[in-house]
Image (cartoon, rainbow, N blue to C red):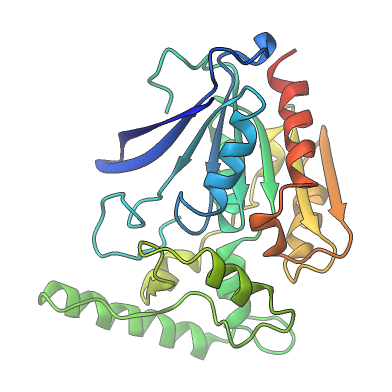
Length: 285
């Protein structure tokens, strides 16, 4: 039976807390020994990233599900800021893959561009938080409205001043459950609700995100492989297509019919085998 070890490490001086999933010594996947998969998700490690980590460890891969800085059990103040490993000899540094879910696919893409330790990169329901923020400030023609941008930056400056005075940071909900035409968002966050996943984001995160472009320089990842998995019905489907269009070979896009963005957070019946096969091909041969 696989085991889960609580681990921690520093990232830019901030302690990150993670769950390290270790295969059972009786598992018979010798070609996968020391291959490790790092899994990021927009929530906390007890949610989708933990589910995907369990899927990988069941197939003989070491896997790591972690809480990002300012989130979950990891350190960082103020809580809820959205700001865009290998020390264990159990892991071969030449056999590290990354799975990014939701916005973590965007962050993972950005990391893979400049970190050659990432030998294979995959995204599940990927999106770019920076693009999302810029789109929200745009006019109907998609051009950023300067007045909207000025207001966003001015509001962020006010929040920083309040924080310097010792006042609590301004926060708002990340996910608007009421704006959920398919009903999958409400269903997921009702079922997978966790006390350390509060659905809150510090308002001034927008100033950090507005200049972030997850997919800039994505062609630099090549010749390392890229796989994107997305539901055909996902509101974020365009991001998967954009990644594949901008990246260089080898690339692969898997489209799951009838699935939305959030469906893939908790359903690994189709995405799981695709990820296992991909990592097997590029990390274990």
